Image (tube, rainbow, N blue to C red):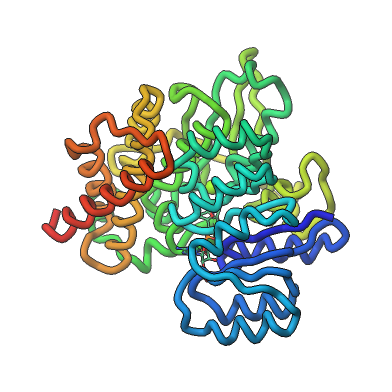
Length: 392
Ligand code: NDP
Ligand code: MG
């Protein structure tokens, strides 16, 4: 029986994880869970799953609701960002599902990795910001880093078909988002409502906007760079609108392995929890009798600069500028918030990110420690907000 700490239990990945736990009661149990703003849902989860520890990281609006539910099953309640970190390192926990959105999940992910847990990682931003730190502590503690992101789960599974040193290239697939094929003129007028409709996946707001800009793929390239220890030139992305092939690994002999399944996050979540075993679970099955056409073409034309920016970030990282991931991610988080709130348009997101990366103060930026990374993150947010306020 694996005891799970679920960070971000009230989100899209969080609720899918709860479905997997429900489907595999003989293997998985929920030991601890956290929520941020949706405390009504958190209290329902507590009533249903009866965890030992509950974390409330955000506003205190409905805290009484959570406390009441926790009292009903004798659960301990912890609060704030410290509570998230405490839960990630609990001695009783075997696997931590990191499903918080944004850089807010970095400290807890580092703690879980440092404590030698199995880290089932959905929170890609944590790796983009501090991948060198997380992989460093995981290497020392022996923590297993198991990807939840569908592309990285596919890569992880395909890599089992050869040795790490025999991998020539890794190609991530991208649905292309709702604006695939749109020109700049149309993109300039794209609305928030249009950006929030994803063609193949139902996800949280931030990752849905990231999918529309292709910043999701950009973040995922950097995530793969850290997770699999690849060189920047070994990584690429292709558009695959059907979202059935979740990524490819090409080996030195030219053989290409991929992983296929209908788009359903419960599968990579479950695999991260049960690896090296597989189990019957709730994920949708492939219909071999239906007619299929799978398309692939290069990602990242001039309309979608995110991929080009990710390549730049990886090159800078490889040259030793370890803080550049924090700059890139912070600028994107701020720009996405500004797009959702109104001050910038769709094309403004990539413009803000590129201009923040270009800012003189971030040239050669280093982030050798958590404190340095957090300082870089904070100043990149400040610079990005300043640009947006100035009407960039
Ligand atoms: P959601 O927005 O649906 O959920 C985010 C979760 O994090 C919620 O539980 C939320 O709490 C919590 N949260 C928000 N802000 C904070 C904070 N500052 N501190 C602690 N907790 C916080 O996002 P998703 O589930 O879609 O995505 C989660 C992560 O997984 C992201 O990094 C995303 O890129 C990645 N991912 C998601 C996929 C998907 O299919 N959804 C696919 C692959 C990767 P509350 O809701 O209570 O406010
Ligand atoms: Mg993904």
